[in-house]
Length: 197
Image: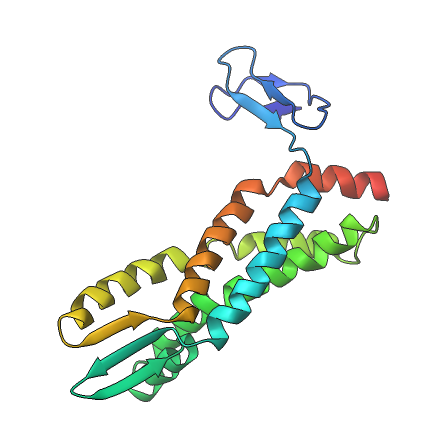
């Protein structure tokens, strides 16, 4: 059974082909939809997210110049700077929400999607899916982007400030993870897992 999220009318779960969707008979709301390639499309985006995550943390993020001195910083350097400045709780929060949670979510998705794309079910697939779905609300790159914009406005008034490659990779990571969330189809994943078992 499947309940409409808009009017709560229950329906028999429909069998959908690629690209089809089922509508509620009462209100016309979308009950379920099937993407054309739920595993491969999400896997491609997840691999892109992993690449951008590594690049965003390896390359310098910002370059700041003040009175002839120029300094480049990475995300990790910002975390260490907060820790050294006595802001331990904030440093741990930024470390978790901008580096660890997105990395763990991406690795969890890769752990599930890569074997499924090869026709295999990885061990512990249910736990891995629950784990990565639990991290969605903690991977708060959008909050970090907002904080970054506020910081940029304030620092730009004090000296010369410019984005570096790490910042562009971070923006690309934010976009790709948003697309991963949009393309992620839990029902299609479980249908594939059931077919392969």
